[in-house]
Length: 168
Image (cartoon, rainbow, N blue to C red; front, side, top):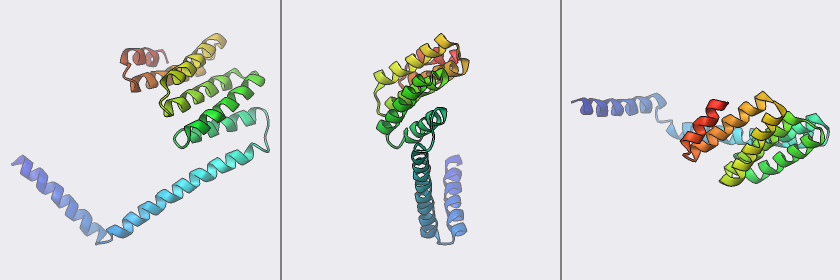
């Protein structure tokens, strides 16, 4: 009886939504599609504006833009994300900015994680943790430990993941 009630409730819900939309399902789906397209365009506009800003800024502002670009490209183009992470790291080293170096190493690690290069990803996570410990940068250490823990969890290395997550 309970299964029959659940099936009837599901059918009633479908009927309810069909009545609610009043046969306008095609219009709703087209609207959803158009909204998704607009969101993609907005994302590209953000990337374009960040890339254009690189021509007008210098120093730590440039590091910040490289960091934002690396993050924007994680899901779109991992190679580009790694490229911007490397630029971020090189400039952070030049500026002697250890917090930015840690962020850059994490950005590079995430880029490699996006292309399923586990060994390179782990290398950069561990390098960021080492630098954070060496320089006593607690925020960087917490972020690096957390991100490494999440990376290890994805790879089903639960004990190591838990250790890193607890450390963060």
